Length: 324
Image (cartoon, rainbow, N blue to C red; front, top):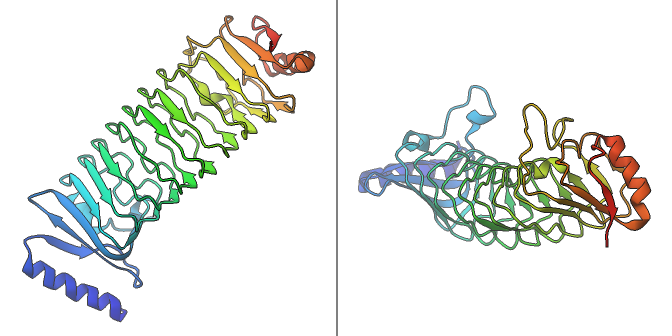
């Protein structure tokens, strides 16, 4: 055991004698000196020291033990990360179902996958302005979260799927990659700003967002999964001029209909393909569209795209017309 870890253990012992709080080590790594305390009166866990808050390894490593602070999983309502905390580990607060607020300083630079997933009561989180990575599904199923201000240095954004009360989100232009199902099942979502350098629209990114009426897809996007729009409230799906590939994204099934996915895009009337560079349209990407939906394409591509669309399985009831 390293000298630094021994010092931390001694400090924990002193703290437990001096205060009516419960104290422990927040990481097993010897180069960390992160300590946590739990206050019964305020139902708050505070992390302080220097380094990373450790992972909940039970989520990915058989035989592992949950972090010590998990004994307060059902009681904790607030979490505070003091200055010096640099990273929040994978699944660190997974299923803290009564957690209401999270506060952190700008020393935090990253949040691991599933870190706050299924925090069903989480209403407010103040993120560090220096975070560059939010891991996969880090905030999935935070059902009471209405808004979240993302830092301007963010490069990777994990999904916010099933955040049922999220009304708007602004992804900064620094974001280069996003996880699939980015905003799926965000049923109150009305406003989305996507980053200018975004390259892909992934599977189910905006599925089941029936209150979403407008979506501006950045010109930088080259690949689109049509399953991204299943069950959205969009009247127009407008794909920009640099799109090269249109994918299905629905496990090869009809995107807009099927036994397990009845037609739910009731408002949809137009799909605009502005690109003259489209090379592939995956099968069933446009299958099941209402007969009220028209496909608009560049005049120079009507014949070529009509053949590609109908060959992919789109009904001939859906007309292909030139963009005016």
